[in-house]
Image (cartoon, rainbow, N blue to C red; front, side, top):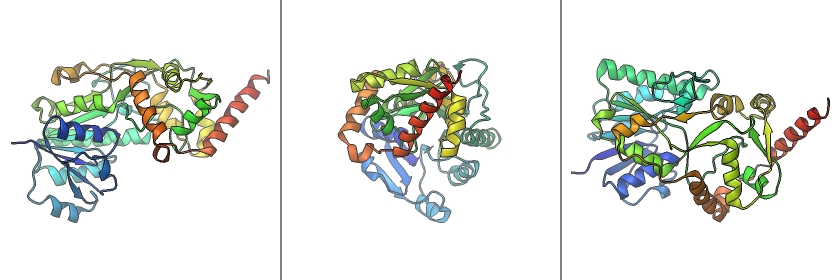
Length: 343
């Protein structure tokens, strides 16, 4: 008999790869519960429950009589949402996997090597603090009531529709790629030497599916990342190499980016100081003990070429220009250059 999983969400960067692996390679019966807006990305054979997860009456009706081996929550960002899930699924699943975030780890951490034992605390990003609150509630439910939770902490995970960057505007990565193509200077936070980890979503799916239905995962937290670590300069240089252009890197301090970004609605306090400007190297030994098959198949130099091939061949979907951010970059660079010449 097939194992049965329910994904809340199921069509995002991470969850799509997991659903595809379960359906196409591991022969699970997979259900997704969402509003049905991106059903086109789901593999044939996926079963769908179209509902708003916050509509308690409708969800309860559609889940009536259903049970699952595993329920996976991808769109739970606040404590009230996971409290709702416990109410929904306490009697309906053998395992509940909650997607948290590696940004929840202490900023700054006492050391750059991060494991599941690293303290959780992020004074710079409300998103991360909300994830911590969700984790704490769920683990309390496990300890006191036996709720079968597993916590998963992804870091920077990408797919063929996304180019990972440190600094970009509200429309995403494309304007930075366009600046690279045009030979314009591209802003990189700090001096470009801090360490970062990027994970291809298909590799993430190997670790995640290995935790599903795994008794050793209940009541535990796991980070799932690649073992490849790059500096931010190396990340941008790899993107430029894939584009066959020369990188014109322009380094700007995180503090300056925070100060000049706030007035334009760019949250660099959270996304940089609370995440990407801090060096991290992940120790994934706990995951590999529980999921021996976990491995990284796609290095960043490979993954970014897959992504650029897709992005460049799907202009309407992926190439969202951002003239406001483009002009902002020019003003920031001009301001830094003027400051250099003042003394």
